[in-house]
Image (cartoon, rainbow, N blue to C red; front, top):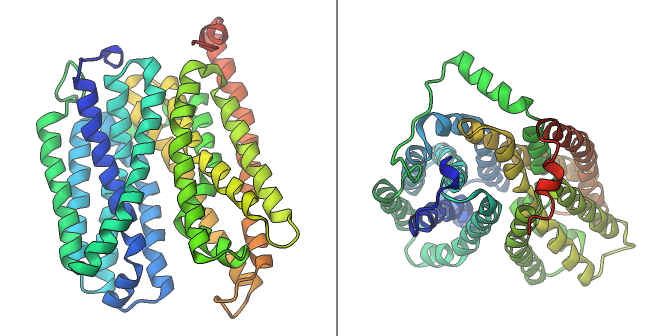
Length: 432
């Protein structure tokens, strides 16, 4: 199979360009984080309307995962990655030129569509170009590198918005993507033996059967619940509610809260390669690592929420570090999907898994807002520590559902592996 073939130099060159495109997509996704005030002034919108940009982008990203997975299986990673990069670049240009709130919303929808078309493609290229034993580590390195996009977006965008203004800044960001699209056309091949790969044509019945076949695999479902259960805590903290929780719920200064959220990104980046190495060395215990990470996240949140008054700073440091580990742990779900499905269905299975964590995060983001409004009616500027304890406790419902399903499909996945290969456990344990 092509995924066992490495072309000297070629694999790393193609991965490097593909992961640079993914980093750029995360940059585009995160670019509004430092442009909130500028967006409010430009479009004359309220805080809730500004938040709609984030919510809409999350919703589009999650909703596009399965269609993108099917497109990758049909047309190949190269073609879809080029299309995604072009889409997100043109969308940012549209955002640069938008002079009304509805036009800006439409532009951000297409930013979300282009963003959704990158990560699955990169994972498909990793599976095609690298040896099986190295795929988990390269997958984690892909995720870690993507996180840099959020970090890189902050300082350059802040400087550019101040010095150049809205339209030139976003036009420049969009133009950079078009340069990468040209590079993709010239450099990337779908596999070591094929520049362009095409799958079978898909009818509606074929789409249904493909998705059903992927979902029937216990490993796909285990991957789905892995992504669902591990990711939402860190995503919610980093996306919207971390700063208000730390400042108003835990009494930290703005600077301290920002430092802790940055530390969470560092934890994500540091844990990724370690988790990739661990699951590559011992694939049988991938779900054990997942359950251990989730239990650790639940435990540290329980300590923080049960602490009398405001939790000490070391405890909050432990919270952001442990919650951050959930990010790379969620990527174990992709490895479970990859090893449970044939090559022509990997992108579809990966798409099923990839939407899980974002759906959970979207539910949690909305639930926290509703609970905060319920506990502090009539004054959204006076959220109390008690209100945040109620709101953050909603996570326990998601953890309970996720852990139940993890345990359930862990048993089914292992049973299926042993039925197919009685020596699977000894073969997959402690590979060294």
